[in-house]
Length: 295
Image (cartoon, rainbow, N blue to C red; front, side, top):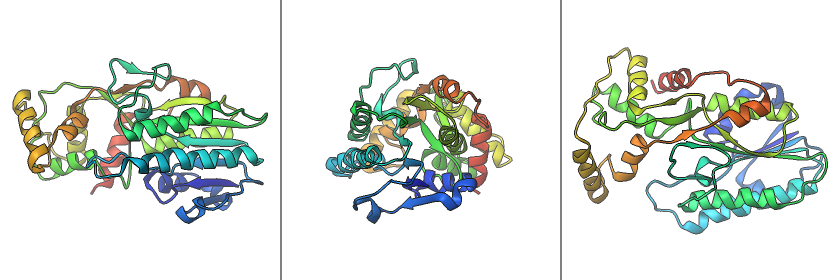
């Protein structure tokens, strides 16, 4: 038996579809289940996907991040330690390590999260790592970067709408590189962790190649059979518009601009070495799959 929290979310739905061989032995845990005393005996693994996501609108109560991302994880991990289950997979986030990346993010980077989201995820990670691990048990803390795939909504969907409507992408003056993660690659990593003997620890999860936002726009345009419309509007003017967006709620604001143009490169070599396997699809292939799902 494999218990899964967050099964109704974006990653959860994709994961359950990806793991047909486990279908009959997978038990999704509802929100109501999570507030009960959960018994993980007679199970093989616990996959903890549930969490409070980063709120770009900043309307959330900060306490909610710690209640959901830390306290709930602590409760589930304690139940795992008491049970006869063998593996605990916690999907954390690269934001538990860093909000801004200078160079390349590795597992050796000293964590310094700046948001309640990142801090609450890091607290959960540190709790897991601090507990004595009984013989025969393993834990895997996965730090995915920006996940995308069928059913995904977010900045990629916003970019796609620009392309679909023929609106030129005006941020070409910003040169950047960032890592993405196809949900299929994440599901593959989780499957490998379930099936192989892998050392406990923290693992970054990202596609192999980092891409610029300009490259992403080109890929999205190709999926629509269109030539990419990319404009090099002066960066200072764009920053001014973004600040204006902060004040009067325009589609482009400072945080969204940073998301679209920041450098955030994540090294995935540790997880690939641990599972002794390459990832099944490339960054560009994954983005094409996501783009096709937007139609």
